[in-house]
Image 1 (tube, rainbow, N blue to C red):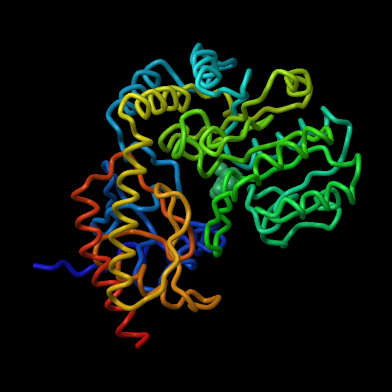
Image 2 (cartoon, helix red, strand yellow):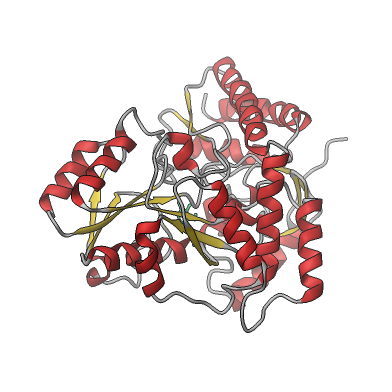
Length: 413
Ligand code: PMP
């Protein structure tokens, strides 16, 4: 019997939430981004590649908490490490030994790094990295790609509410994959740019992903070197899904600073910025702290997560499964007579329908149909594969996406 998905408990929780939390749920987890009536707002649990919402509906999870879940929900090795540390305590007056163990491990797997700092969110480390670049160079300006996402802080948040023009006064822009535009920006602000920050591939929400074109990242590196600019790689989204040594290694670029968050600790709150020797002094002098920066439990999770990712060859597995999903969905799209763009690395894919317009009408029907049949993927954000996905998951998913393409065809004849 096919189960009908209903969301009564989710909806009731949302009604209560709206009274006591502005908007009910904020940020990218706000269901406003999703297909109306087809998605839950609240989840109850997860196991491996599957999640259950508060109404008991089960899904194969292709958002992985928007990235953090890289080994699957409740991975036994991560949970064991978490339990062991939690039994000892989490938050002390100073860090525990894991602060050093994890820092040593991260430095050992990252060819371009000699040190690391820890924080909680991607935004924390991206902002701090820009401050280190400024302090090290004695310059003010940061160059970022227009449309890129580096977090919620005033210098880069995509929503203008609450931001002043002064907050952005020292931010200058260039276009990803257009070396000439960076050359132009650097020339226009000659001697003023402290740092260039960019992600390893273009993954702006609402835009097809773009892998770096031949020579782009090498050209960025060379421009930075020639002009004394610190190169910051924002690997918050892609980190540990493409290469254990950082996505810079995957694409053949060695940044000066690399920021991580999401997949570093399989869902436990931790971020990191790794850097090279020449920036150690500046890193030491830029004040950085937070109430939970030294918490030990997420560090236990991170060490277990990264070691397991390596031991289980998780990155290769995500690529292989991601390719199967991509090939299957592209064949289905062709069969249904759709032109779709399936972009990004296989482990972090993004799909759009040709001529779907700015409102994502086809993609919303597609994602909604998938959700109502037990496959959770967002219509306007890249998806994430985890190492816990199985060939059986992909098979079941493709059975669902086949029906989802048919549903889009029925509505957009
Ligand atoms: N940079 C990138 C590339 C991201 O994808 C994100 C989060 N989506 C951030 C920075 C900010 O991370 P956080 O939400 O943990 O502050």
